[in-house]
Image (cartoon, rainbow, N blue to C red; front, side, top):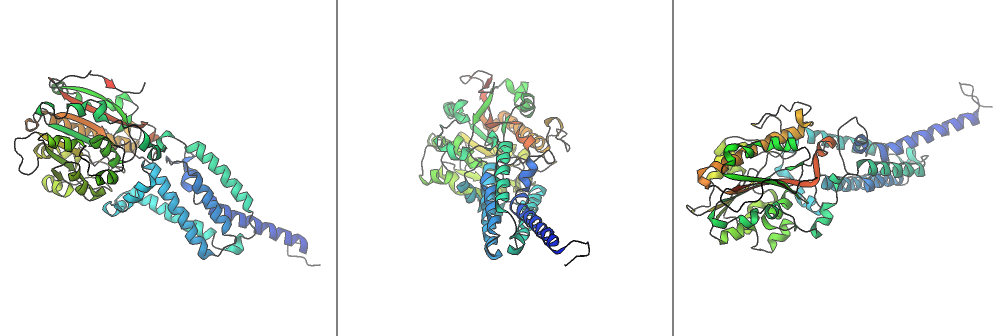
Length: 469
């Protein structure tokens, strides 16, 4: 009879060895097919890290399927299968995070070379995490022999359970399917709701539309009032009536531009391909207005330098020219002109050759783009690491930049070069924050708007229009 050094007889020793192989194989299978590739989602279900992700039901189950196949297929086939699931996972998750249709997200990827991803510690950490979890998962799934004893139903059962918990725990109106249903929804632009679109061009007044990056509708009225305080200056109130509220958004920044400038939910490429002349800059140009678009980033981003003229802008000014005039650069991954420096440039902006004609000035802001660089705003809300009175650092940093933007708007309202213009300030979309606490501070699916209406023009009531009850 064979006896091992511990005194076990041969059959008992074989059973223990088989059990050890079974346990090791299942650990490898569960780690490589469930725990490691879904690490970030696991963290969102705990209070250890303030991360918010949308439910990833399909991806969780697909990773488990690849792991089960790793028990039967050579590793050379498992690698491309795993990477294909990873690509699907990233596109779907990021599309939901940024409120874009997957097709629109893929179209945006071609512009990624204009974004300095590695300038952001957040993006560096996310890229490093994805790379590390991918390598670790593939190491776990690299040996058919080591996985042969694993129990596939156990893994798939665990994956189904985790997918259900993930769906319930991470389901949120902040990650809605607006990119799918938005096209059939009626357009509700702030320009229409506020009365700005109807007033624009009346009486030959200058017109200013400011599209503010990530200006969602904060649930806290005190926080909203603090951000927009420059518009409530008593000196400004002598010349303007202020109205404010919120409107529904779908999609990303270009969707916000299409909503407010053209009153459509169509994808910008599809809309401009029609060469339609129904957008606000087109209509004002037909009434003799000089039309100017200003954006602090590169004009090639989302082909704005090409389609801005198509919808009626006679001149476009982008980051390169603006930075030459201001001498300052701001931003994190999206580096360009500083929003706080824009007042004199906007007041002076006009198409080449235009002198005394009324103007439509459109400004798409930049610096509140996520991730937000700290300590670049002129406003100081004492954010610190905990976000100060705003309760979350990124929200507080964005609030400082939004306050800077409202300061610029207040300066434009007083600037004699613009002759008491009609002014609308509106967000493009809510901030696509990675923080669950940060997102919770905003009303899902809504952006804020503010209208400064010159005294003497037909007045709307001075109240919050469309505010949630």
